[in-house]
Length: 347
Image (cartoon, rainbow, N blue to C red; front, side, top):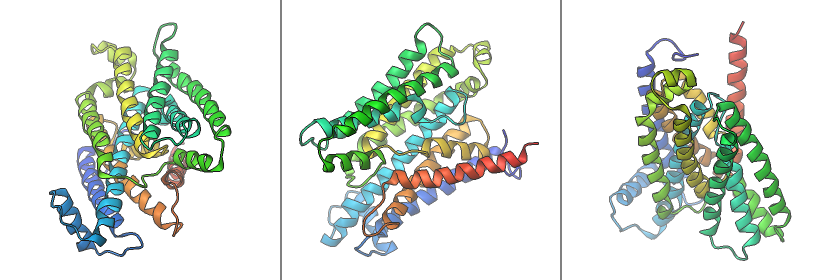
């Protein structure tokens, strides 16, 4: 389906409405996240705290610091990470010409999981900073190994890239299981498993700088190449006929996605389904043109993860679920509904 979902409005108008609605939902989610918790807070109170924090006004009463320093940073991090993951998924689906592709297909998620679990299991009393550092290095290893296998022997086709990613993911996942088996004690094992399922718990304002920078830079980079992504999605022959070098462009885009995914997984752990389901839903609404699809996916991905974090916090009070559990449940359900609907529409 190449047009908008409803057919009642142009794809450009549908994209504009979707971006506006997603941004509004994301902002509302940040405020609701600030209101949610054992310390009750009203809408205006949270909005006031967010305003003062945004403008650098330091005076915040003691009780309000829970909202300012604990709840709001995690909500904003969820927004940024969700947006970045959806952006990377949208690009990867164009690169491999497969709407079912996401970061996990190309070995990035498996590599990040290996790096983080290895840091938890084998570094005695690992500092908090070593875990995201290990995740980033692991993600770089996963994407690098996938590219190395895909380019071995010449050629860099989408099918070869997917198969290389699957092989890399299985290899790194096996090493991750070995690291889990050698974790040494139950505390490390629980910590590693919880990290693999994703969480923005404990996020601080200083944790936002790198993910936000990567999101802004990555968005600018891929938007400039939106037309090239359209050409690449139609196949290498079409791209070459228009003067592009598909293998070089594909390598550039995969490396850009590797940086985005590596930073996101390092900041929030292994969060699945955002990079798979969100671009797929947006494609049904706004069409396949990446000048519309990229902003729509980014906005919706951010809003989706903010509300997923809220659900993770309230579903199992007084404890909380890993955010990856919520995204998998919501994403898997939405994807199944889309699949059933599309199957009924086909003759």
